[in-house]
Each structure stands twice: as structure tokens, then as C-alpha cells.
Image 1 (cartoon, rainbow, N blue to C red):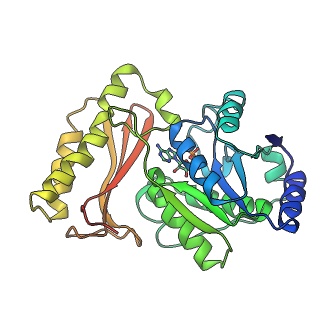
Image 2: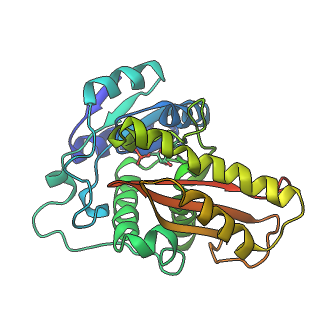
Length: 284
Ligand code: AMP
């Protein structure tokens, strides 16, 4: 496994791979790898001749007052995990190489970026779409793997690649959870022991909602009302959103159907956690 730090070197490597007729699968991350990332890497390993992992805490997707500076970083540990996962190249560029002086272009997807996380984090998806477009141009993968953990991000990237005719197949992987249900996230390290315990309301809310649907409840407003009340019982929980949306358009729904996804974003202290799941057992 090699680590490439420069954009030009990464481009050269990718070109030589193309000339040799080999395919690249790609897993973009911000590092501080956990088993959720590992599940993406395992899938990536199967889907291409060569596997590239990017580790880049992308400054343009963080808003003012967000956790860019504190975001956890541990390149050495990430290298060990990546090596075991069969990664061929780690691409870990410097921000000044990705965004050199004079940089003036960004990529924006409209519509589905204006709800959910896009509403509470203005500019976030513009940063994500810009960096993903740049990474795709540099690495030229045939396949890229993203997690359902960031459900809106996956939907936005699918929209972006379709709209811009990018020759990359996008695959989504299920959310990887701790044994008690908490969705794995690099940001979980921010939680105190007590907040970590309170944060279980996220996965419990998803289970509760699925049980309501199984018992015949189809009214989204009823489900959302009950979940908000349930989450609100935790002393440190501050709800950002609880929404039920169509899995492709991310438009709010009034009635649950096979395309319904329940999406949650809740602060525990300063830490904002997200989680989601399909509501119907027979979802696509
Ligand atoms: P991040 O490093 O947080 O930007 O995440 C990089 C990729 O890993 C994204 O596609 C995430 O959706 C995915 N990911 C993060 N956490 C999980 C998880 N618990 N299960 C599955 N995928 C995840």
C-alpha cells in the first residue's frame, strides 16, 4: 500500500492504471476510520481491480462555528486499518493542493440539498459536491462507495453523477452500528459517557417508528410527533430535524409507503448526530 499526498502524483497513478486497462474503486472519507468505513472498503475491494481510499477533512464542507479544527484525525491508525482492508492507495492530499490560491469554482446540486442537513448546514453540500467532483476527476474511479449513514449525501451524489454524466457507478452500503445500536461515526468520540447513553434514542426511535408502521400506522405527522416527544425526554437532546422523506427525491411525505425513509439529526451538547432507516419492510 502506498500513500500519495500530491494531486499531480495521484493523477499520474490513476492514468497509468487506466492505460493498463485496470479498474479503480474508490472510497472517499474524512479518516479516523471505524468499522463503518471498513465495510465500504470491503465492498470496494470486490468491485474494482484496485482500491483507492481518500482521507481528506474537507474544509469547504464545514460551516463557520462547525468542528473542522477539532475533527478527529489519526493517519497512522488509518493506515493500519487500510492496509488490513486491502487498500492499494491512500490519497491524503493537503488542503492547499486541493484548493490552491485563486481557486474559484464550486459544484452545487439544487433541490434535494435544500432540505434536512442542507437546511441546517448551509453550504455543506456545495462543499461535498465540489470535493467529490474533484476527487472523481483526479482518481477517475469506475466505482465509488458511500454509506447510507449519510443518506442525503448519497442521494445528492447519485443526482450529481447522473446530472453531470460522470462515468462513475455509485454504490450505497448499509449503516454499520455498535452492538447497542448507535450508528458508528468518527464524531462519537466527542460524546461524554452520559451523552453516549442518551444518544441511543436515535436508533431506538428508528425501531419504534418501524414498529408503529408494522402495527398499521401510516400517518407521518403522528409518527414524527411521537418520536419528537420520545427524543425530547433526554436532557441533552436538542432536535435539529425528524423527517419522513421519499428515498430518492427527499421530499417530505404525509403517508408512509415503500419508499419512506425516516431521517433524524439531534444535537447532544455540541455534537450533532444523524441516523436514518427505511420505514417499510418491503422498501426497494
Ligand atoms: P466520513 O469519513 O464520515 O465522511 O464518511 C465516509 C463514508 O463512510 C461516507 O460515505 C459515510 O456515509 C460512510 N460511513 C460513515 N459512517 C458509517 C457507518 N456507520 N456505516 C456505514 N457507512 C458509514
